[in-house]
Image (tube, rainbow, N blue to C red; front, side):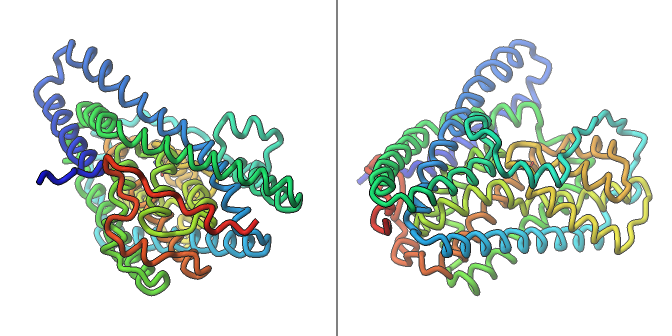
Length: 438
Ligand code: ASP
């Protein structure tokens, strides 16, 4: 009997093949013009970018309908408040732990000592990071249509929650509208599975493009910095997250990691927590068993405000650049770095490369030369892919903890290895309506 390959195994194979083809092109065909213009900048770029667009296309409608169902499913504004506060506090705490861990590892290993600064002339021009006051003011959209058009996640979350609360207050009209939102949510979830069907192709081309441009050669001179970031990412994922899952979510971390595989692959190949939202939502609800009422709120929120992996990169980068420029950082500076990284991760969306923009803000605050960022630019794409995996894992971990505390986690789904697996068969019915309390 031929065993059906699940879509995430297919994507995994496509990812490995893309990585391999890209690396081969990088080593052997770097100077061959037609390969670069027709393959790398042609075919690879077009299909990869179209695939990312297909993912992004799902984010706004999915978050909107899912969040309406979520808020109406909760049915009680005070519970919504509680979930919001819990998720937000946990997001901040986990990011705090991540950056402290990164700083400790970087201080012990001291990457960048004896690094030849002059050898790598830097050409980084920082994009100014948004001031905190603007970040706060801009949570409230002055024009919701604009917020939806631009995909501004915090503004969308704010507007949809207010809208859904108003629906709850409207009685019958709200109930009817919610039924419609549930149907639309069901359909858009189906679109997610359609996009997943073509994902192996999209992921192959994304990988091939990235690795034909980047290659692995760039990593060698940066090995100290690179391995410190990786060590901290691994420690946070397998240490902090596992402990949180065991003690607060009462879940087996091994099952959790296994069930997050497709989310990890998407986060890695797109380097964007935002673009991964549809996949994270699907996995957290249908594979891990979190009720839509919690996940619809915490996952999009996490994609925007929670970036543990990014904070880790920033911690290590700060110590690395300080070492390279022989600048001594004191305890007060480290405390500033922790605070700034947390604030920076709240105010910026999960899109590729945004971590570097936020790093400029951190450097400014502790008086490190911002052009130092030029030194780590070369390896940033690969690290971006890796830290995005940690970012989305953090979102799912916090979601599980909040769901457990609210009694909104279905252990039978979590423990069922087949739950929510997308083969070539029907996806199980989402469990939105079941919990709706309207
Ligand atoms: N790419 C990351 C994300 O989307 C953010 C970053 O670190 O640049 O989560």
